[in-house]
Length: 145
Image 1 (cartoon, rainbow, N blue to C red):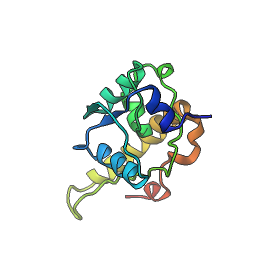
Image 2 (image 1 turned 180 degrees about the vertical axis):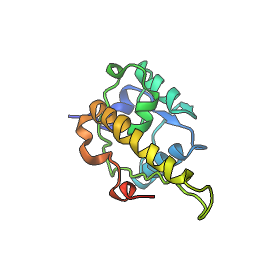
Image 3 (image 1 turned 60 degrees about the vertical axis):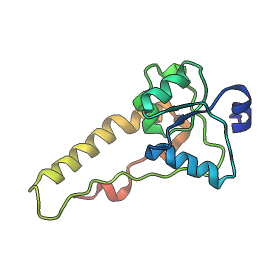
Image 4 (image 1 turned 120 degrees about the horizontal axis):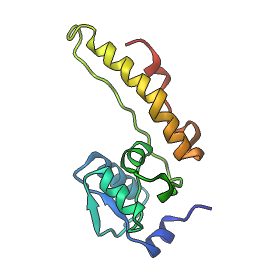
């Protein structure tokens, strides 16, 4: 059974993304919606720093799969567990002005999808097998740009 946030907070400090980042703001908003006030002395701007501190045993953090993958150097040093509360949802969009840049947006879209499908999604599923379809390419992203 994954530890609760109370269990984690009793044993280790919370390592936060600074509230000046979108990730930090999103996590803090979720804590607020859940009525949680969690102490945390360490705040960082980057996923590399947050994940490195957790991997070094300095504390625990709330993060998203892509940040864990991005910040992790040695997969065996972390044990990602499900968030013990309402989950997070995030969508990444490619936005361009219409009738500009010719075929470049479609090429970038295709390249991004290729890299995500070939490299990122499988690595995340290997790192966090319990995630299942919680990290996937949205069907709409597979449509032609």
